[in-house]
Length: 464
Image (tube, rainbow, N blue to C red; front, side, top):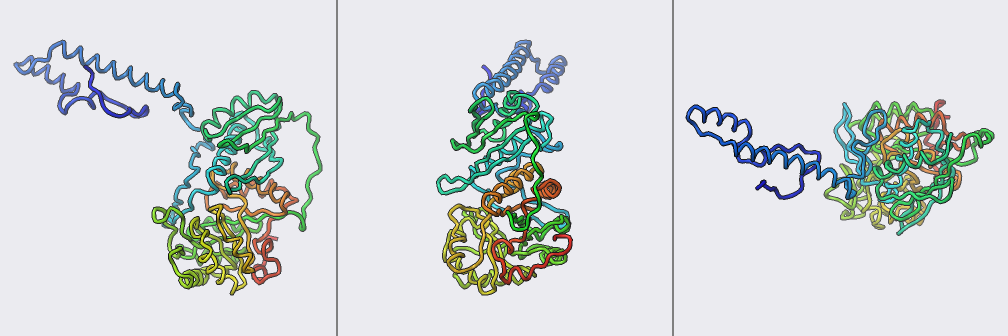
């Protein structure tokens, strides 16, 4: 009888028959014992050898049947190897890895950003981008035509209408897309609406409309002209203060970027000076208590719901002193703290006394930051898009284009990114290809025009 083990054999784990035998009874031992038997030791019978062969054959057959069953029952739906970009597997999506730099210690990072639905939407976005690459199309064949903000269970998400300009019918594109969606967002479904339109739903909610156009049917339109009074976009980069080289690269992008700097990072003052020398806006990236605390820790200088209002105000005031040139703050984590009206009011009192502004990173849909700031007369704004939930240059570029479409509709948009190489690469690409009718501006220009916050930020020639 073949020995059995409890549990399931993982298909990617090699299994050797010696795992099923006591120590000292593997195949090599059998050979040694045969030779000893010929010299007068224990002689292993031919019947034992036959049993060993049966065991090996059974194990091999069982492993093969397991892998086939995995495919048949749906557990093997995802590809053996994930799609890659520039040779690197890019499936770190929901929980972003801790950033390690050559000259810095690891710092805490955000909770899952944007909620499960919005994160799944970004996975679908990435699957669409990967499909273009696999079929040999350039990224300009995917054109974000329209973005609409919708709400489900109190959380906002973005419905996108995307045009794909192809050289042939969409059949091959859609067929290649199906396994990619299965891999990146198996909670999504793809359904045909008509001959040229498909719709994607995530968790049962329509999130994408794909319209397929033939390139020869398009008529080029006029190029957009630069606008000062038209739609505006704000780019905020969080978690700065550890990687000095990244801060320098950010300052050299050539357009306004708001530096959100940790108050107690290894290089807070050095990074703040880089921003000041480039004429860029600085805000405090204030750590706040997340729902998952104490499992997830927001880092040093954080505020917690258990603190008294005076303790909260004192902590924030101290942190503002540690970030030279700061003209406001936004929250790092804070999914629990930003729901606490008393704690939020204590933060805002510090800002109001200094005529500073606040940006709600919106790490939880029930945040009261915006409502309380408005009631207290503190200039405030709310994040529209997270750029790098999916760490990919092309995905970051797509999120920037999404922010442009939101700005066209609302008049403005605020996008938040993080110090990842893929984010920097996406921003560099966006500089070359961005919609010239939408103007990048400082956060203060958007939410606190004419206030003291704006007066403290002077644009250098490179950011004008």
